[in-house]
Amino acid sequence: CQCASLQTDDTREVGLENVLREHSPDASSQSEEREADAQPMKSSLHFVVPLPLHKWVQMVDLPDYDNGSLPCPSRSHSASGGFDPYGEYVGLATLPNQVQRKSVKKGFEFTLMVVGESGLGKSTLINSLFLRDLYKDRTLYEVQEKVYQTVAITKKTVDIVEKDIKLKLNIVDTPGFGDAMDNTKSCKAVVDYIVCQFEQYRRGEVRLNRKNIQDNRVHCCLYFISPFGHGLRPIDVEFMKALHEKVNIVPVLAKADCFTHSELQYMKTRILNELNDYRIKIYQFPECDPDDDELFKKQHLEMKTRIPFAVIGSDTTVESNGKRLRARCYPWGAVEVENPAHCDFVHLRNMLVQTHMQDLKDMTEDSLYENYRIAGNHSPPK
Image (cartoon, rainbow, N blue to C red; front, top):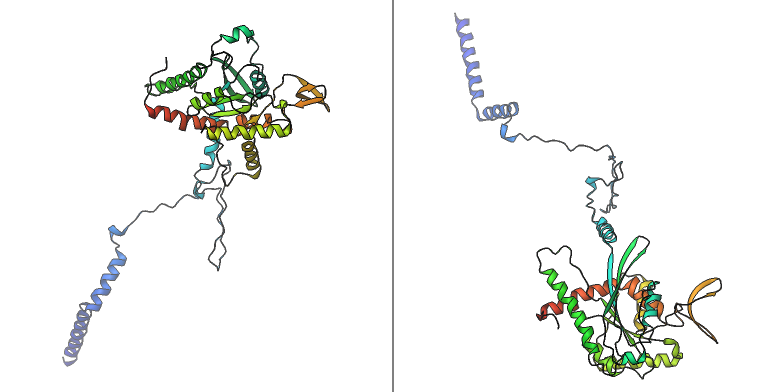
């Protein structure tokens, strides 16, 4: 009996120790941790889908760089030739191609006005510039008819295609300008025509359907200065002062083969000084951008120093060293139209077509037409 009682007491002591151990703070915390590990909370669960690995992406181990600088990663390409979307490539570099493709498909349009008295070679120069005979059906007036002739505005349109580039060229001529005894109304006819084109374009802008607005605004005016005077004549000053805020004026010194080299330089300097004295605004070449190439900067500077352009036109071609050239033949030799040492024809053509055609259109849209629109005097001239 004593042994049994001792065993019972030992059992009670062991049971008491187990109870104390289970209800101790350390034991309760350990049990809670075990339960938390065994039964995770539902609120902490997140369903994560791994990004698919494209078959064209090759996983490589990047080397360690001690200096902290990483090389620029190259863009990975897909098997079809496109850029990997995970290479952070947006595609903005294709925007110029989109604009070019749309512009080429639509084509280009340019309106050129030619002003000057008869006999200065305007028609011949235009034919030489664009290699087209635009004046096959022109009428030549007698001297008696020119005395009482009024200025007539004529417009010719020709489509020129070169290497899949289409240009709709509008030539506005002013026959009769400066030929009459009284030329007071000569300027008014030209000014009225330019203002009418502004007004027609403005009315097209305020319509509900503005998708197909016809743009007949004059983008550039070649004004021919006679070589037989001593600088600008009164009609030259009057005309350019009346139009210099409505159109881009490019002064042209006609029949440059009438001058020697020194006479030509003197004539150009005098014309520029008179333009400055009368505060006549002519077309100003925009400044070159710093990132323009050196060849363009040199060409740009050469064109600026050639104003007013001393030009020669010819419909006659001669053969020289196996090549056909446009030239004017004299007993003492030939003057080549496209030789920069003989005249400024090449510089004028480069300016009109190759380098500044779009700038002439932008100046017309952003400055000249905008000034007319803001002025508010929108009644068409009578």
